[in-house]
Length: 487
Image 1 (cartoon, helix red, strand yellow):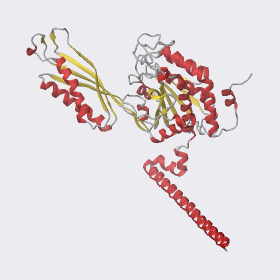
Image 2 (cartoon, rainbow, N blue to C red):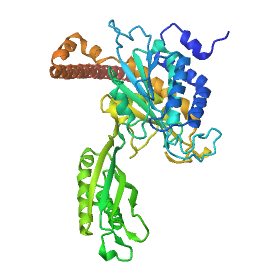
Image 3 (cartoon, helix red, strand yellow):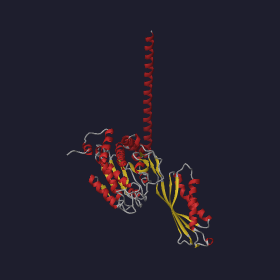
């Protein structure tokens, strides 16, 4: 029976050069593109809300079973799979991987009623994959199809986390609490994104998604007859004034160069149309990038809330201020590694350029603990109507980008695991010191790096000197030839 391209790649016994690795990734991704799209449509049709992703988890498990990839279920929903590399140096003598990377895909949907009209639209009323997590599942399954056919190119171990409950900000912390980051050297995730052009991937360094906080404000006035407002203190009016006053924090308290948003998404008050409300409450979200702005925001809000209410004869209190997620900040080296993976798989034109967003993402919890990168896989394509924002009931994606996302993730994982470990860079002497004196080891690494830089500089200087001498010699020879010619 004729083998598929992926099977031929898996059966190859000779070590592949870097270009051949990328070529293999592309070939397998092309072969499995219909599979990736099919999976995306399946999960899109059957969305489930945060912490209720039971069918989703079961369906992912069925796909992993078909690939013979082992997994565990540390929580009620979501799962953690392990793909072991078979490169000769993938594991140390004690059985631990020389390097381990975590790849993460979130799996929950939103309480949105879909209105796309797609054949595979949600069959669960009031629930929709309106943020692309169906795509994340499908792209990750595609990545696993690639990697499982290329284990000889994997110099370590890949841990894959299908994470529940990203939309309510709980899933990452829950998964981390089960130990998914134990022994992990780096992390990678991708987010399908409607503001990045289809066919490109954005992975710039620095802040990419914002600190996400939730708040509640309670207002206490004095209720009275709707026709006698002078006898009470209108909590609804006070709440409305607080909504407006809060916006002065962004316009007058914070530098115009510092991104920040304060959104009041709920205002509840009153019991009857002819009664001045005695109580009301507001609820909303704050988004920031800067650390100092993030720290100052609760006190800035508290001052305005309390004083605005007092000026109107009422009382108000910032009764809750919860940090849901910290900002997603791509590490510089991880960002560059991802950029190179994009260029290898998609070419230079595959590099996306995106300023970042004040939306939030709990992948930040992983990146606060290990270095890594979140890549935006672009899906914006006006030709097919893929222009609606995340969370829209009309949200639509360009499915041709899914296999590209799988390719980049696979390339990133293989490249990351092929890099030398810190122990290999240190050598036995510094490694031994690091076990008892990490600070001294850091100084030794710095000195070693400085010595290497000095050695490189001396080499460059010698090369330049030899080039200069050769230039002088060539010039003198040319002059002599010219003199002889003149004679």
